[in-house]
View 1 (cartoon, rainbow, N blue to C red):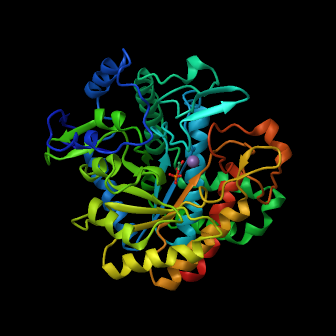
View 2: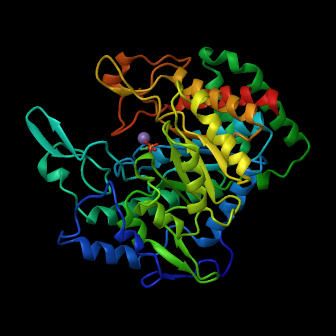
Length: 456
Ligand code: PEP
Ligand code: MN
C-alpha cells in the first residue's frame, strides 16, 4: 500500500504547538499521570513504529474528497468498543467480511465506489456519562475501554493502568496486520463476497431483497463474462478509524512525516472527536486541528449552525476537500427537524465537508429486561431521514457510520430475522453499546441500496 519513501517518520517531541492541548480543558481522561508505569508506557509508544503511514492517510483524504464531491460513498463500521479478547482471526475476519459484503451492496445501490473503513485497530477508549459506576452499595471508577481499565467490576480491574496503552497498540498492530493480509490477499475478491451474499439470501426472511440481490449477481457475472480484470477486483483498500479520545495515546503515536514535515496521528488513518469532547476551546479540538489526518466530528441533536461553522473554521481553515467529516447522530425522532439547518448552513457557507449518518447513538434505549439496546426500525428511520434531508437541501448524503459485528449476536431489536429481547441473555456480548449483528448489518445495506437506487 505504500510507495518507497512514504514510511519515513520521525518522533514529534518538539514539534511546535503539539502540546498546547495540555493547557486546555481536557475531558474524559483517566487520572494516571502519577502512575509508576506512565512514563515508561508513554516512552514505549513514542518509540514504536507507526501503525499507519502518512502516504496512506493522504490517499484516504483524496478518497474522502471524492465523497465530499458526491463521487463516492463512505462506509464506517465496527464495534462500539473493541476488546483485547476479541482480537482473534475469526472475529476480525467476520467483521471485515461483513463490511465488504455491505460495501458490495452499497456500491451497486449507489453506482459509486465505496470507501471502506473499520472502527477497528484502535477503537479501545470510551467516553462515559459518569466518572463512577455504582452497583448495589459499591462505587468504582467507570469502565473507560480496555486501553484504560478492565471491565470486571472489581477495584483492581477498574484502576486505570497506562500499560494498557501499549497492549492496545500491540492488539491494533495484529488487527491491522490481518486486515491488510485479508484485503490484499484474495479474501476481498468480489466474486467471493458475492457468494457470501448468496448465503444471506438463502434465508426466506430475506426474500424481499431478491430483486436487488439478483441484479448484483447478474452484474458480477456480466463483468466476469466480459473478462473484467478480476486481478484488480481481488484487492481493496480498507482504512482504520477510531475515536481520538485518549490524548496520551494519540500524542505518543504522533509522528512527523519526512516528506512534508507535517504531523500525523499514526494510530489509525481516520480519527474522530466524539459528541462529549467536541468543545471548540477544548483539548481534543486543538489537538486534531494540528495533525494532517482526515478527521470526523460527531454532531448530536443540540448542535447549532454557528457551532458547525466554528468547527469548520477550527479544523478545516484551508477548506481542504476530504479533511472534515461530520457524523450526525441526532436520533430518528430528531433528524428531520434538526439536521436541515446544519446542512443548509454548511452548504451556504461554501465549505465542502463529508456528511455521514450515525443512526446508532441517538437511538439507544433500555429494554424491559434491562439491556441497553436499539431498534432496527429506529436505526433505519434515521438513515431514511438523513437521505430525505440531503435530498431536500440539494446536498450529498455521503455515508453510513454503524456499530456492527460479523457475529451472530443479539444486541439490537428487530430485523427481518427478528431478534427479540429474550435472545439477549444468551447472545448479548458488547461491553458498551449494542451492535447490529451480521444479518442486520447486511439487511441495512440492502435497504440503503434500495433507497439509493431511485435517486441515482
Ligand atoms: C461512539 O461512537 O461509540 C460514541 C461514544 O459516540 P458519540 O460520541 O456520538 O456519543
Ligand atoms: Mn458507541
